[in-house]
Image 1 (tube, rainbow, N blue to C red):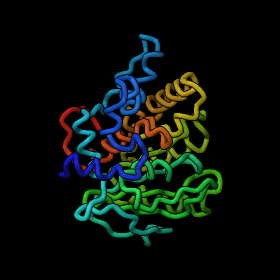
Image 2 (image 1 turned 180 degrees about the vertical axis):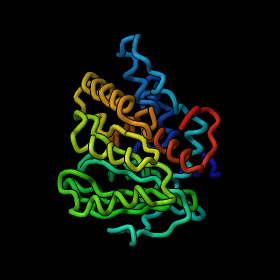
Image 3 (image 1 turned 135 degrees about the vertical axis):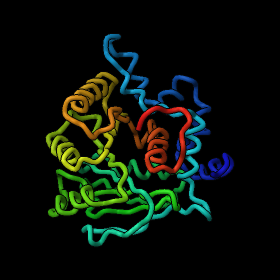
Length: 278
């Protein structure tokens, strides 16, 4: 495992809060909001609301730092774009465990992946202002630890063969350990999101839901309503979804550090000391 010095060196040219070292320098409330953004909303909930599922994955700062080092590219731990594929028979055969990111076009998949890799800015993650820019499955290798896959978006401007491309991957990819389904936190749960959720349930493979763009909700009230509506969907309509939703912003980096840690954990790349479920 790499030392803190390596993580600090990775910060050069990165966002001011890309590194845990910089987040820990924030005042306590802002630091808590950056690392565990869902905790900021809990204070506005009625005391009768059960928030147990919001704390299932609660790693320590030491665990988050351990995960952060995996996202720092070094000569012996190279992080890079590997290849793209339009169909499963074009997908690379890789030994590492994989996580993939799916979501509606313009939900911010590529932007979030870029934020996750922000400590290694040389990693090429293409982000476009045009919805539906990702037309292929893009594979990124994180050393020998794991692989991350940016999937094409569904809905607006989705590739015509989206279903033929994505469903076989989710169903048959043996190295896939977790699917991250991204949902726009500034909007109500969309019909296309429900269809994607049903697809994930049909695959019977573990997935987790991430609310993106949490900084664009125009206030806590709207985000809180969307979060609770999503939590109701998770509790009432899913069996394979991790009960805890995650919140993330690729602009403020809120929730990015927690996601790094969750990815490192579910891929078996680190052993956490202070967490419960996954």
